[in-house]
Length: 434
Length: 93
Image (cartoon, rainbow over all chains, first blue to last red; front, top):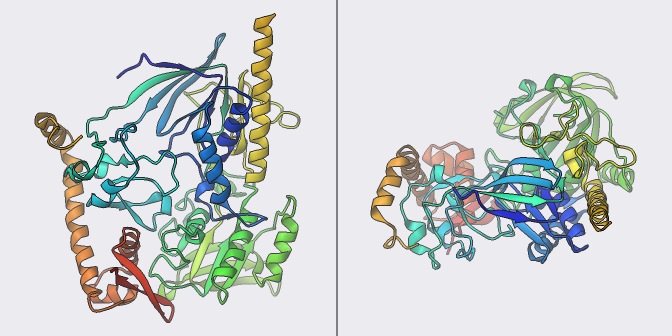
């Protein structure tokens, strides 16, 4: 492996989701040279996979795609996708990050993103981008607006049949590609490592992921997205258009039994948003939200909640105790009714969505000497007045890496992190000049 | 690189190294090709819903839908008319 390659930048951004991209763009526009290191094969993070955003119901990809393109085409931004951050350390000279470029088995210079390899490949593999509701090929481009538009090969599922190499018009397939190590030196770093959802199989009472028509909120985002797996909302078990859809709130948050005592802050609003979108796409369907309490705290959020009620979405104050398979592939929900007549009740729905909570997508332990909180999110040392400051000088944090928050707050915090990093870089320059 | 240009010896060695995953992939291709053929055969005489196809070929409905979704993505099938709560799927072209 080639370990000699060292690249120098002003700022290193870890994570190419909406928070990382906003920070990168804000710094690059101030003429700082920025490197973005992303572990996935494309930038865009979770936001590019959403259908619409609350409370404006703007198309999520219409906001994310221009930012992705702006970052990709910015003279001051270099994107490193499909890369693992091995270490990120700080010394008197600044930040040094060791990065490994995982092999795509496709030459990034030659690949033109034509997808002929994908169409020729004979192996179908579960497509995680589509929530596991569709199949991709063993060589593939993650999705149509992925950046960069480069194919990558999933060698675990490749039969080495050679069909991709035979059809590739630019001879880009390289079965022998190896991981490549390189070093990024920067004067500051921003951690924008985002979140993942609490896993579907975590809670025994909710079926542990074994009930086909119990899905996560991100899977529902894919069903609602125009470029989703079915291009409409149907039940994943058999393709039935659902007559009744339920949301189970706090399915992965505010639950000490899961080790997640905190509120994930976005679940109430995304459930309401999805319920409103479902009302539009399935006007005859009954939509029920089982909730403990609704937390509509942001600008315009309370009105959004009231609008949802006015649209006929049913809000049931209850804690769902158990979810089991029902008849004809329906799902039975057993809950304690906390309003109305009270008592333990059961109801059947065609499709149930678990409003899963947010947990950090990255643990810095052993990689970067930055502290984390008890909840495993990165510790902010001045959460009230400078929430992007970590306990490692010159290293800042943005977005959900520091704790659950919505897109509005993530983008605002990304701007704040860029400003702190910019101040830090300018102060260093002044020190050197003095 | 075109297959002609690939060093045959190196490719042979790579096949040896990846023996287990290649076998798994080949088995998968075989099963998937048979399953897909069964689904396409069912649609030769016109569109059918997922439960109709599943019942005819004795395959779980969720598996049939998964294949149909993938085949639609790659342009092999298209969505047809709705029959009660289900959509029919047809061969493209």
